[in-house]
Amino acid sequence: MDTMNTNQNLVQSGRVTTEGDDLYYEVRGQGQPFLMIPAAGGDGDYYAAVADLLCNEYKVITYDRRANARSTMHAPQNFEISQQSRDAVAVLHAVGETSAFVFGNSSGAVIALDMAKTQPQAVRAVIVHEPPVPRVLPLPQARKWQRRFASAYLTAFRFGSYVAATQFMLGVRIPMLKIARAQRRSNEYTRSRREQSGEHRLSVKVGVEFLVKGELLPMTNYLPDVERIKHNGVKVFMAVGEWARSRKTWHLQVAHILAEQLGCELVTFPGHHGSYEDMPQEWAATLRRVLHQAEA
Image (cartoon, rainbow, N blue to C red; front, side, top):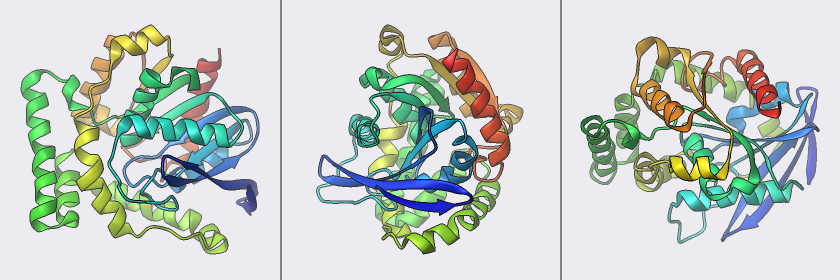
């Protein structure tokens, strides 16, 4: 693995080849392993600030999901959630771990749920933040959301992926302006390290195309296998942001339903859907608290 210094922390980086693609990963710190699965866009740098704060106690592992950022996109590229779960396990093995505490936000939360189903041996506990899985909702609501996501998918082929991505973001009930500002802050935080590393990145255009034409429907049509997760004995913490809770959004309803079905705790996180980028200290404190509970 390569090493670099960033924000007073030593970061080790490397790549693992699995199922036709090379996955880029980073490791910070030592201690209990903690894997963070990124949301749509698949860039592990989303979590850089939080990872830097947690690595004084945990071995924090971040990575770029296949077809995103510094990982590769070799043909044929067919999106499968079970493959995403295997990718996460491949990253764990590459950094010398067989299991870890796992966190996922949004699309990453869906992958975390699938890991609890298909890769329980690799999961010590999962923290699942606002997964976009409308099929757990009552049937009329579930169908409404599925129609919205299908419409965005079709828009990608009629009017282009950027139009489709905007339609998706506007329809999903998340604060787009807040998330855009958070992403700018995150980019500022990692800019100097990006320039230092010189790693090749897939273009934003490629990432957006992959999101709306490849990832969108499999993610939003996913139905968590609650009974299998319970049978596997994986400890789950459902999580929702203050923004979603105060506005009683569908993400809150999904989290409530899954927490009730799984018989697990529902944790409130600071801010909005992507506040780990603009409230890293508050997020790190909440994650640390939940991880301590998981360890106990």
